[in-house]
Length: 540
Ligand SMILES: C[S@@+](CC[C@H](N)C(=O)[O-])C[C@H]1O[C@@H](n2cnc3c(N)ncnc32)[C@H](O)[C@@H]1O
Image (cartoon, rainbow, N blue to C red; front, side):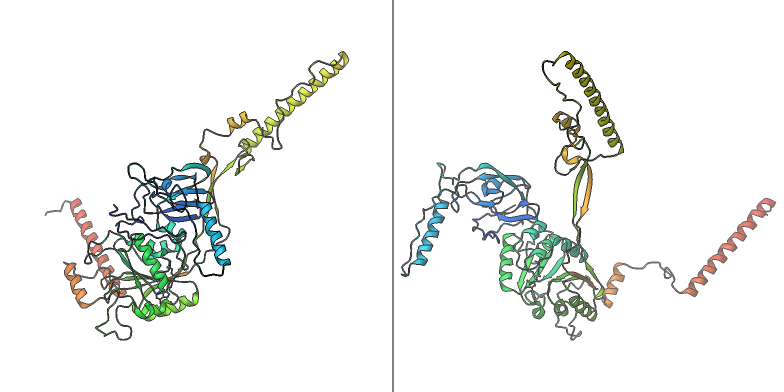
């Protein structure tokens, strides 16, 4: 789907960026089935350790590595070339990398810098480095050294999603995490085709999640209405970083970012209304932004020049995100004054559950996580019976050999010494045999190891996840005489003579009485007809 894949600028470790890309589909929306060069990938080093990386195509020596660009981790070195064109989710083994002159060059640079700082003269010190040459093969193609697998470890390469991006993004502010934003997006009814306002953009965690929620295709031209996020951020540096990130992730056509203080400037874009129906405010003082999200000028409702950022044909669903209750109180007061209804507050107390299989049994191996006690009463009794039988056999054998010894002593010492008493004696404190054969026979290798044992879940001991209070509210659409007339024309009421479901108590009683009377009269008529028929007077 990508149209163009120009050369990326080498990325910084913490805030990877590439420039000059005009490719259309974002990897967050459609990553394809395999990893691609010049595209974002998330490297999972361990469960909660995720690193975003732009995979760079092989372009000869890079930063002293003969294998091209390399990601160095505590689990080993991973050349980008080993991670390109593999199915998403693949396990990537570490490689032995050839640093060539890298170590030497770096040392020279360091030494030269030390020297320069020692010297007083202003003369520029020239640092001698070996010029990195890009090897080209006979076909004119760039050559890189083929990576050799190392046993130091492995990682997994994951496609970018808002969830993994939230866990790996370069933090510039406090971010909204997945448990909160999934609930918020559901409550403000963000769905494909929605128009959403977000302020402030911060680190872009919510922006990525909302972009995916509203996405229903890229607009072909400005007149085409597609799902869109209008995002606002007043911190200049954060605004520029986020702008670049959206471009790199090919989300800039879905998320329109504006550099603005929304308390003063409001939410119009180029003087026009975004016509939003969902709003998310992650601001220190949401009540200062609320007057701008009105249908009419709050200071002068008759002001005809007022342009509302809301869609006049739909109710607006709003959520504000505030860490302390004082902010909530102020926000709720402002909402009430401005006509918002259905106001309610929610706190998400997310709790992680650890799921694992508990393997319990006397005959299991001594692996980590195995509980070597009896699985049930039957197993305990069977094992005790076995031990007792062995014990009895052992005692009987000992008696026999004592008798033999006694008779041998009488006859003189026997050749060959003591009998090898291998069989029968329990080998450890639990009465479990250490024998490999027995272990193999009973440890259930017929079942896949990950399916062994009972499935158990364990909750986190305490909930320590207060992030913020979420305040939700709805601003209904305005309903005019014209709207009523249009609705009546569209849904005409034909043949309805009376109101369905009378609410007045007296009228309800009267109606019931009439119904009863009718029923009694009907019954009386039916009974008379029956009697007449029996008497044979019918039709006379
Ligand atoms: C907590 S951060 C938002 C984090 C973001 N929701 C995320 O998930 O990454 C709050 C942001 O609001 C911005 N901000 C604060 N006051 C603002 C204002 N008046 N107008 C626009 N942005 C504002 C701050 O610069 C900051 O980046």
